[in-house]
Image 1 (cartoon, rainbow, N blue to C red):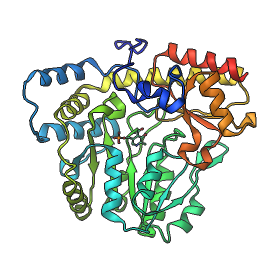
Image 2 (spheres, helix red, strand yellow; image 1 turned 120 degrees about the vertical axis):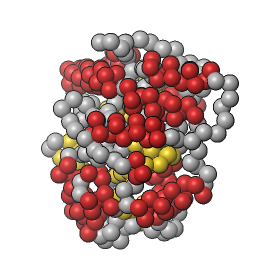
Image 3 (tube, rainbow, N blue to C red; image 1 turned 135 degrees about the vertical axis):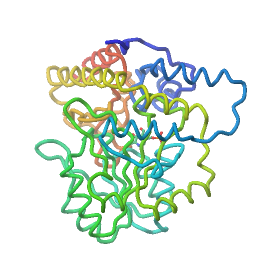
Image 4 (cartoon, rainbow, N blue to C red; image 1 turned 30 degrees about the vertical axis):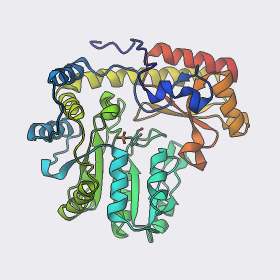
Length: 387
Ligand SMILES: Cc1ncc(COP(=O)(O)O)c(C=O)c1O
């Protein structure tokens, strides 16, 4: 490998949420932090060099996103996902979460029903409840092959809902939805006039053997009735630079969406996010290929370890994302006790399952975007306390 993902980087005292908020979140400053969805790998050298070059210019004034910036995103989506996206469909938004919140404001009214598929990333829940919309849970089901969508229930729910926020691929369960699954979802949503917001933040992190389907590529009708969100932030570890992209094929929706973004003055962003995103998308293919192989190695390590040493822990091997969703319900303990043992005895900082919805109770989400030695240490600690 050309890039070194084994390197340990000390992130303490860098205002890192994952590291520097451990006491506040886990009541223990010494947990091995494997929670927040950023990576412990360094951002690629060519991205850092571009940011440093820009930082050396002594003025950090207002900037705009130019044609090469949007062309870099266009080229990336074409190469990685075989998706041709006209640059006029794209617009800047500081974060994917900010973006889908703005879509909620732009396209729904207070009291409107919005569907999410739990267990799912906590801000999906908040985007609905914080704006006085009504949360409708289309809970995922666990079938023979892992998590699946409940289309029968969705048929009922779509009759009265205005919007569905889709996690594509899905965090935390790690599903890379197939084209057939997404097609089924889109048919239901189109038939019932439900606008689909597709959060595709993890779409570049599809593990070997799987293929991401951008929602807007399902059909012209699906494209016409959706808003997608993309970013280089998960892929290249740039979340602190707050730079993402909304992709809205339908002109009427696009104008309404961009109007809302501009009304909130959320369209400017920071110069370093622009430089980093553009550079990553122009030059990052080889680095990403190696990253994905490394993450797959971590996933395989944890899967083998748990299957061998901890048969009570059920796990779902991710098809995408660097997250793994672990089911500790086999221990028959209340969630508070699972949490205490994990944070205080094992000294592990994983995400608490119920933060992703009631159906996540008894689960933990573990972040595997870290050096193998960290993963090995985590498994040692898990085994000591749980076997
Ligand atoms: C599915 C999903 N969407 C959005 C985000 C956050 O994106 P942003 O930082 O661009 O708001 C995350 C971060 O974990 C995520 O997992």
